[in-house]
Image (cartoon, rainbow, N blue to C red; front, top):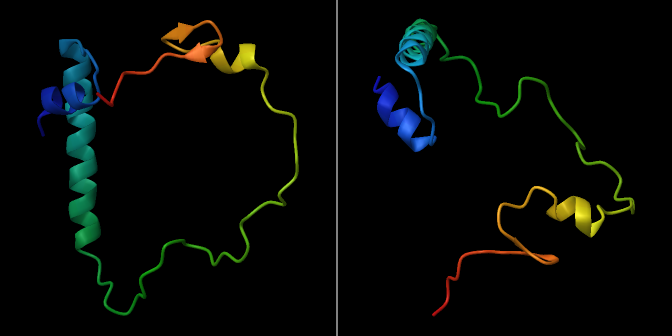
Length: 90
């Protein structure tokens, strides 16, 4: 597993100790996948959830929205009361 590649994709800077730690975790995860592949699942039907789910939607109720100030509080690029976004149309 190339931890440097994964860290770059996730935009993370990892120390050498962190790289070793995460490399060991990834190795453990991959070994567990190998164990799971040993299971006989021929008679198991594919499912998207372990438990059967009926209606998982909540009632559609009107609730108060965030204030403009709260919504913009952590915006990385803010201009007055608006989000600043990169230009995508020439």
